[in-house]
Image 1 (cartoon, rainbow, N blue to C red):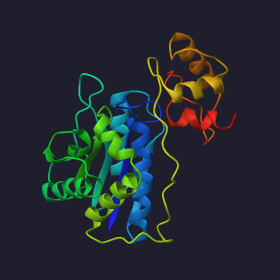
Image 2: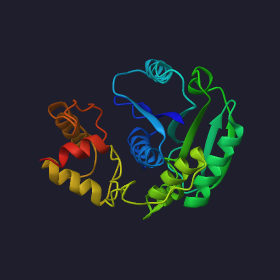
Image 3: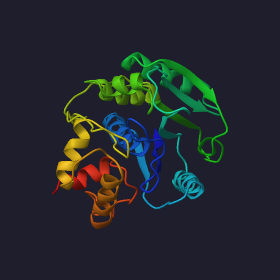
Length: 257
């Protein structure tokens, strides 16, 4: 079985941002699902867009990268969802989009919901370019909603990230995957919240300590974050995106101070 697995958006495009950031979380999920798939012998190609700086360019790049692989059994793209109106306390759930893979979409969505406790929104038929323009059968997984407090609480609860990733891999392959040394273990370190202007709490206080500033996350903190991003690189040595938003790449750079 040969699969191409891609994360959403690009290094320069965050995607949906609220309690968590779509780009960062989709890359985490892809990395862990990849470990599970490879553990059961899947011929896997992982794709992350570290090039595109615009939405259309990103979509075209991802489709081309998938199609460049040639013959394969499945294209799978990992995303996180969002609804208009900002942060909500409502539970919203997980869903999987498809064009030709209805049965697989149903299976993946149900597996994620069963493993995590997220609401099962089920299969969604759609015309997303990653579904219509790739040359292999494709599904687009929306793990949960970044602006749902209930969804994010489940996603970040102990063991749930691991359960979700395992469920995705098992539902794709149809194989039961035992967690073992061959699969490794997910990092137990909690994922820090994405921060931007208007954020508050202990995470902001820690950020300001690292930046040697004080007060709320307002204009002064955002300017300090942008200055830090402009002068630093991520853990892979790539320049940070200067957007004033503290996601996982910026956290990684701050951790080296």
